[in-house]
Image 1 (tube, rainbow, N blue to C red):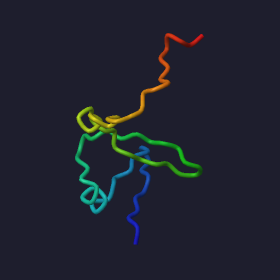
Image 2: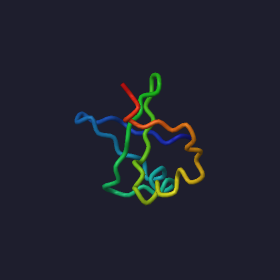
Image 3: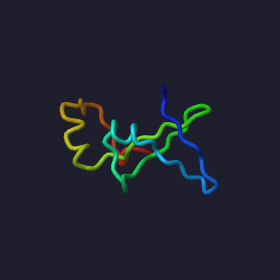
Image 4: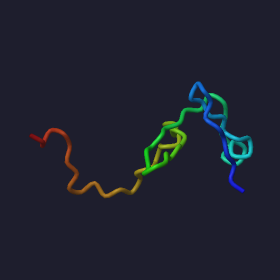
Length: 70
């Protein structure tokens, strides 16, 4: 059974403990909300350390930067 939550009168939602534990989410963590059709995708904002090395091995041939735009 999926975990559920109710929107409060202050437009707040408490994330169920089972979900927090499974995802290893902590208090104070920042999230981004991405509209998807009739719903919303909620994802934690990654830290700079988590993004380090993400583009290693990327093909930069043909890369354009802002200097060659109109």
